[in-house]
Image: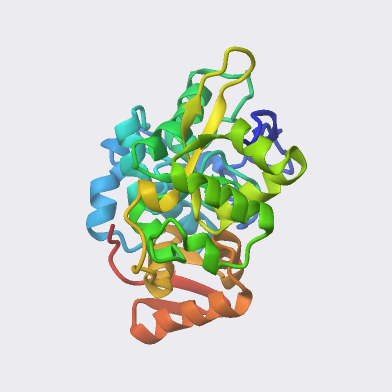
Amino acid sequence: MVSVVQHQSTRTSRGPGSVWRGGAEHRGLGLVDRSWQPTSGSGASCGKFACFPDLVDGFQGEADPTAEGLWRARARRWGMTGRRVGSLGRAAIFIDTVGFALLFPAASIPAPSLWEAVAGDAAEPFASGMGPAEQKVWAWKDQLPRHSQAWYGRFVGNRGSFLSPTMLALLYPGDGDVADHASLPLSQPAHEIASALIGGPLPSDALRAGVGRRHYQRAVIELQKSLLVTTAGVQENRTGWPSAVLDLTCRRFNVGGQRDHRLATERFLQTMVEATPKELCRCFGWTAAQARKQLDALVAAGVAERTADRYRATSPTTR
């Protein structure tokens, strides 16, 4: 489990428009005055649950090529404007819409986050401790995969993150069998954990005891980066913190035989509006050559365009 403390961050101030993580600075666009940022009462906001239906039906990004234009397009696409996400069901719809999302925002990873969809771009997580918004997203990271509404684990940028069931199926490396781990180059502790989970979901403390505390965390991260294992709720303990429950991805979700990196890249670019091969590498853990090959394939197919080292989606957004 990733500790709550790990997600705490501080504000940065490097000129006009001091920002938390959410504005142009964290998106890798340079520091921009936030006075133009759309709010829930502005014309740029849809006023109905972060514009999700409109975005799903036909979002094609903004024509404005400037940093502000990209920020505005991403803010709309990532649910940072309009009505906030306030329920588990809405959280599932949000993740379905974007395809992938961090749990909490990270300054070095341009990506949507569930936190921003719940609390807004200007809110800093844990600024006042474990508040109502923090409690929501912290609980949902266990509830969403437990109900098979979204996969959760260490994946996007090697951080706690969600994948929609559709995106998960496009990226899952196996056949959808409980023995998928056997065909992948994993460490021995990772194979042991995957084998133990064949019999059913298990709490983290039982798995940790099986492979040893020294090997457990690294092995679980290895399995999650391979998308073989997801969190699946929590188990209350008589004393101390609850234990995370882990389960095989293939038991919780319809995966196997649907791997399609080209389509996953198209969905990624639609969510990012515009991106570089490096951003795709960081998101899915691919090599630079893999990322560029997939992005160039989209250009060849006419669903993306390239300017210098940046690629922009031209196809309508689909779920």
